[in-house]
Length: 319
Image 1 (cartoon, rainbow, N blue to C red):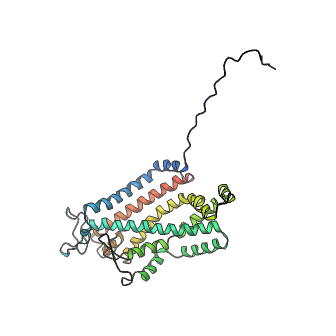
Image 2: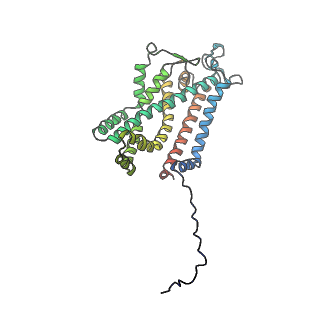
Image 3: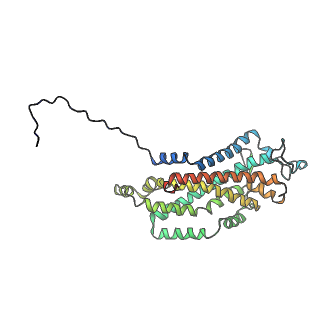
């Protein structure tokens, strides 16, 4: 066993190696990094940017009255330099109609999903957090709504709430809008919240058992504060994915209703009711092709981006 010579002076004290600290990255930063490297998500985002620029910049180039001006003498003209998308059955320029109809279709899709997310989140959080008989009642209601097709519910609701005498058209910022636009937003939102509620409930059931939620209760945090601060923020990732895909579903449902003649009434154009007007003129390919093309581009872009968001926020789903 070696001994230390206490008389021997200490000549040098070795320097402690300085530890390098690396700043960690948040889950959100890692998810966004994965999203940037997801090829299909980038393609989807590019498609959505193109559609957005088409509908927004196009409205600065072509004034809104052009979409309403009709001249029967130029009805059903083929695409040309003067009318790149042709004209409809009463001589309205289809390029202008597709631009301003796209604004309404996108607005309906986004606002309907906002309604859908609000209702689904409230029901999902209440069912998952409170549990017991409240959970049982809310989930049975959700399953009952899921058993009825959304299109069927929408048709019934529009039959009830689309009477032009009770819901007249209105003016906003110099443009005329059909009241059925507001009806369709709530019809789509209130008939498609069920999947959101089930997703949110499953996340809440997992999150409410975590230690930080127990700690929040231990220090006296109320139920409302616990839900808003600790539980709802942890539901954002699946909610974002569901909302993204919900916009595509809402746009498609509005197009179905418009094609059946039960969508947004004139004078408000949408991609769906333009295709509905073209139903009797299928030989005039340009009449239905251009609104259908933009519906396809929008839904493809949203679905590609939604897949990328799902993979980015859920690394286990990466293949």
